[in-house]
Length: 359
Image (tube, rainbow, N blue to C red; front, side, top):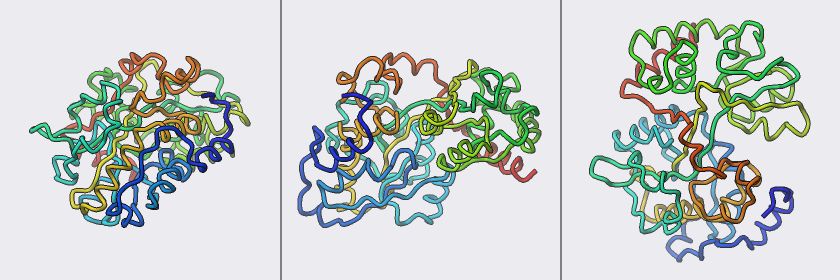
């Protein structure tokens, strides 16, 4: 299984339905569901990633791309996303959805591929309520680095670079309170083990830094496609990012990807269903999350997106180099990650973030 396989070859293989391990056809009850709307990130839900599931089941997967997790949570809470059938909370933010009663309790016996998940994800309590019921399933993980143009920076950046006047107009931050405020906290000297539980004084210092940073930014990015385009046109030279711009542009432009010593932001996306999802759609949703944990999706997103699923299903089929590309050559790597955790006073963080952007 080589990563040198082209996108065209991969899509041809997938379209032919030959990818190993695709689940059997769903029953007539599920087949009656003609369409499911999946709210997810544009990097997780390329049309080609879901094409085999659509072909096998006859159920179309309509992709609704998210701009931020905060927006996703708000849409569910206010009822403005009534058409979503499957959603994408983060591992460390799932508690908000569970506490608010927004998610459907899951029957893990309907997700056989969950048995192949890495233990760190299989045993996590972060997707459960106090009674031990499961409401979300981790399915994809990785890290969020600093991506930069090596022809525009004279050295590898760290978080302080994102606040450097030298690069005014060429910097970008993600429009997301949790990570952006935490990065400002790290720059202000808060230790990595306390940065997601900052007190009022530390939050005030982070806010000052972010207000100072704002005039230096080209943008607060919302979609990774927009940020990739800004790198391609030279409008952005350095950004707190996902790895997508690096992977998409490195064959054409001098791109770099830095993992700050202060701490690399790890992430894990989960699959969940809205609490009021009808049972006929829930049965299809169970088949879909089982597909996300299976070999077809794992192979596609590893080859195209350079991301790893939470399942070990294809790990042994990859070379060490291929495993290293998606950070599964040594599973201890996750111990060095900073896993963003939305604190109990996250409403205070959101208030600060809105004030920073309005400044």
